[in-house]
Image (cartoon, rainbow, N blue to C red):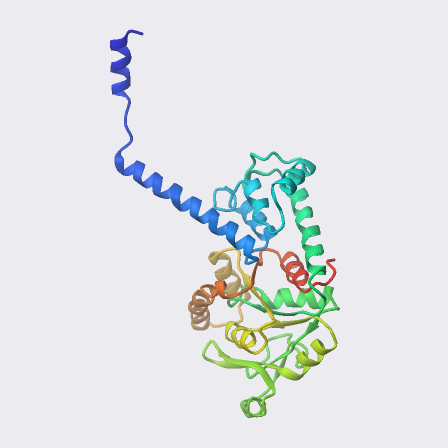
Length: 311
């Protein structure tokens, strides 16, 4: 091709509009910042590595999915370059892979590595733990707690007192202590509640202090399933507690769960959804986040934080 012809061809190629280049640059910067924030969350313990692995599988084009597996491993405390390289070689994963691009077998091998590492880490932290499980309405706190109750009998459950009426299937003294307003007032007055709050501008919920303290004194691990306001009070009263935020896989899934359970009127559903938006914004106040995409998996993550054997 002659120089004149080449020059003409070069000048005839379309040049991306300046606005497109600026937008692409901004998107790239935002993506890098999102991945950096994700690595920081793993490093600080705010997010578990396994939850990020699951998020990457669900959203391969998102921050977790586009995170290089090398950066993913290096963000985990106590994993350096040598350990990272040895792990990738053992798991037969290429260092150029991204979390969202892992094959099914690679993902399962990495998941097993993370689980074994979590078990060792949990055992090293001691056996007596107070874990508070909270999250937005309809996220599945009751389902996760029920699964733990059935499959992990080692866990001591705190039974909350409430002034609301029992739902179908709920048993007094098992799911809640159902009390009237006068009795709840007496419990507050006599200092019998570790925390209490008005939830959804309607009913009051509270955690009896005595059974929790006795279980902790016996060296047992205790799980409190309470609302956000209560979790904040427990943090002030017992700063050694680990606060776990149970999050939905997505906002749409949270809405589906709330409407699907059919236990509230339309007005009540709308009121709870508005509350949920506020509750979701409080995630940063918690020590750990567990995404409830699967009840057994979410339950396992919570139990591992309590230094109890995984099933």
